[in-house]
Amino acid sequence: MATGQELQYWATAVCADLGIDRGCCDVDGVLDLARDAAHAVMRPAAPLTTFLVGVAVGRGMPVDEAIARATRLTSEWAQGA
Image 1 (cartoon, helix red, strand yellow):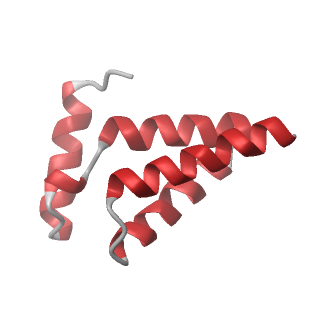
Image 2 (spheres, rainbow, N blue to C red; image 1 turned 135 degrees about the horizontal axis):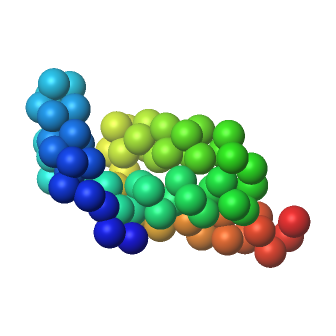
């Protein structure tokens, strides 16, 4: 999923304002996860899932691993639904 330049600028601005390392912000990965959660579970699952991934990352889990685990869960959820 390609993101627009404005979204990249927005992510950079939010990271700077919140004191977050921009390198840990995988915009495409988060948007893909949100899409998957919205379709596999229900629309409100998108912001909730991405928030929970953020909490996991804040507690020390690498962002790639957190996104991969949540993506796997959404896929499993869709198969069981």
